[in-house]
Image 1 (tube, rainbow, N blue to C red):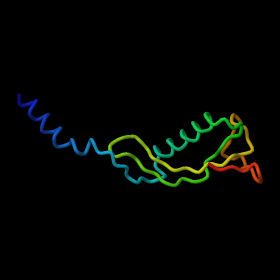
Image 2 (image 1 turned 135 degrees about the vertical axis):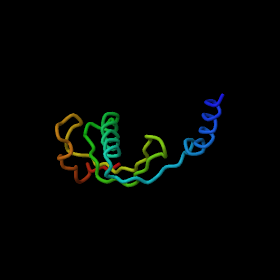
Image 3 (image 1 turned 30 degrees about the horizontal axis):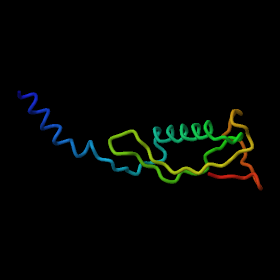
Image 4 (image 1 turned 90 degrees about the vertical axis):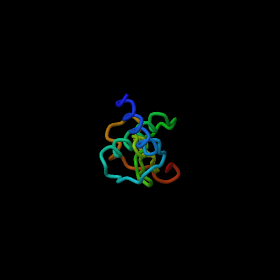
Length: 103
């Protein structure tokens, strides 16, 4: 009985904090955020019908949902002259002129 009562009191005390849906600003240099950005760019390149690869140009918003591993980010990507599956896309130059595209 005492165990159930203490568990119930603990849940009541933590309930509002655990159920919070607010996003908090975080540093853009944290390891976990950088990994999530890298995954987002990879995922974008895999699902974008364009034959050219895109690379990261700028990170705007960097937020994480409180008490969760859910990130909210604004990224600017630029189309490169390299194809999607070329090596070392990070060092590939951006397209210029009428072919230039940013998302």
